[in-house]
Image 1 (cartoon, rainbow, N blue to C red):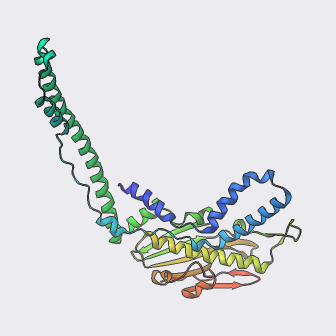
Image 2: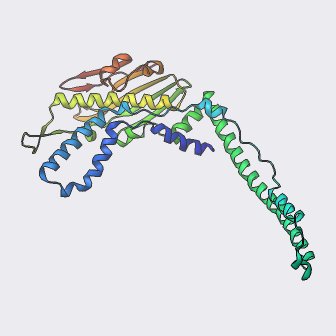
Image 3: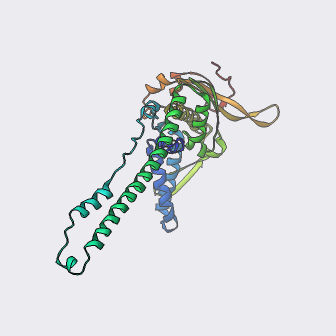
Length: 327
């Protein structure tokens, strides 16, 4: 497998375990096709399901587990075995030639010599077919050998802490593509073989709902504006969940020991009246600590207490700017 082929396999592995929230989201998207034919109460129920699922997707990013890439196994994979030349077609033709015994009709119509010549030609053709087959196998082998060598060398570069290889892996494989799909931008800064710093630009305006949806006792749809307290609580969980997801994805892809994620959000500058991008959460996440967390049951915001972090959050105001963690 070539490096490119390895990246394709890694990309598939990185997708890893798909959390229930995403599965349910796809089910709801399929149901959307029938929205026009739904009755009012069915449509109301569907709308509430979509709303609840959107919240679940936003605040359960950390539950998405990437498949861990074992670079040691890739490095230690044995090279392909060089094929041996076969004489299958030649031997089969010789066997038919040697077993040929002229029958009465062959002798009667003087076909013995013609058939011998035909068998000799078949042996010659068998030799040619064996050679063609061998050359095809050799060509495949040489291609596999080249791909194996490329992949093995790349794995060795990763394991030796080659930062260019790290960069190539991150460029080729997006271990946290889902967060990008939710409207956030991610920038990586590879400090050394053990540490990657990440800027995570979160976009609350487009991903956090402004209005809740729920069913009345009669089954009809109702909604109301989300309170500031609930809005900021969802936002906080979303940001913290995204931070954890980033770290999990990077640890699954690269043999690093520490990830520092700084979430950057838009905060109002009351002096200018404009929104500015400022750090709102900065977290240092050691691999060992992250591996001991049960992601199915944590509260994303509460889980920050497991790490060294800077965060100033107020229930009715949300985040305020903080200093980056520098290690």
